[in-house]
Amino acid sequence: MSLNHAELVQANKAYTLASWQAQKEWNPISMVRGEGVYFWDADGKRYLDWSSQLINVNVGHGHPHVIRAIQEQAARLTYAYPGIATEPRARLGELLAEVAAAGQTSGAAGQTGGAADQTNRVGLNKAFFTLGGADAIENAMKMARLATGRQKIMARYRSFHGGTFGAMSAGGDPRRLANEPGVPWVVHIHDPYTYRSPLYRGRTAEEGDQALVDQIEETVLFEGPENVAAFLLEGYSGTSGIIQGGDVFWRGIQGLCDRYGILLIVDEVMSGFGRTGEWFGIDHYPAVRPDLVAMAKGLTSGYVPLGAVMVNEKVAGYFEDHVLWAGLTYSAHALACAAGIANIEVYRQEGLIERAREMGKVLRAGLLELAEKHEIVGEVRGTGLHQVIELVKDRGGQEPLSEFNQPLSRPMQAAAASLRQDGLSTFVRWNLIFCCPPLVITEAQIQEGLAMIDRALEAAEQLLAAEQQL
Figure 1 (cartoon, rainbow, N blue to C red):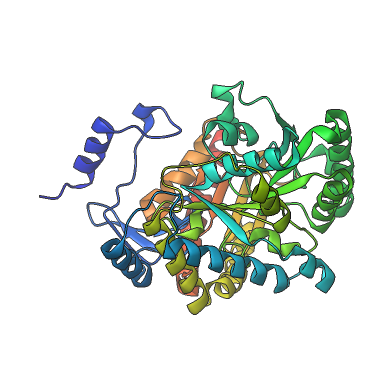
Figure 2 (figure 1 turned 180 degrees about the vertical axis):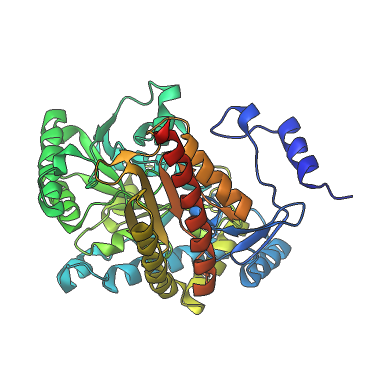
């Protein structure tokens, strides 16, 4: 006999632990089935999945092509230890090399670069398979340190690279603080946060980007370039609020890598596989030449756990003659690789990369209309189906509606409650509402979600007005 919502939640709370929160505060939505951009709880209530779960179910729930591929692979072979060659492992590696090259040579909408930049980027042609995004980051950092003989990794304060110890240390997300000190060789740098960073005050976005690059170069010199193995940067910023530098910032980072022999690790765990309207987030910046790219999430759309690190010829060449001191029991899992192959086939056959780009324009237009209507919307950021709205008490003063690294304010709680009541599932974090639906979403479904956000903003505004009158 199936459990209803209350019974299912109680059973989960009784026998399992939830991440990133005190257990008594866990009040989850239940989920028993999903289809496309929707899922249903145990009482039959339908939710619009406005965040693609953890911004990973890119092809939507229950895609028949992916399910069939998993079933067929399970009937043939589910597991081989990582020292064995398998067909799905080889085929997925080949496909990843193809899509990396396709993303690098297709040209990025709205960015400069040119054919020379694009040609130089081709060469990410070998993959090391992991279980997910965090251990892809762990292994990317290992590879960079081994290949360079240097120790330090430089990463942004407003970033998240995973919950394992090294990845958490590399991320600047405040969730790292509870377990510090972490690994000792991570150095944090500041962010291209045009909306709030004091470095951008009185400057254009381009001038602020250049000032930030100059500051980062100074940090490199303080740490000693001979000690810095790599920069670790998200290809397109995610969990920290989709805070993304422009072409000047990224060209500057590439210039520092070239000048000081520093490798560039690009974290595409969240922004990869069409999320931003390109194969990878970094494809918006054709002049950038990553040495290592970490990926997961949209690689299988969460159907089976899988991550990967793609490396260029320079890094791969080092490990031809040197031991790759890395390994995982479930690396290159046959069933997971089959799911990855099927996902790439869906992206290609259904034109989901281009679809994300076009539906992203619809989403952004709708979010900007909401910003015109609601004074609490301070800024809309992002591209493709990877967007966020930042809420403020006063648009002129930019005071956040909820403070960084603090519990949600009552107006933000009101917004979150409204969304849940209406049947929209997404991240409401600090003063941010994330808008990252599956790539299969339609224009009508986008309008459905925007109407729910409209009502949530009204609820937050009403409570804010009541508080200000006290």
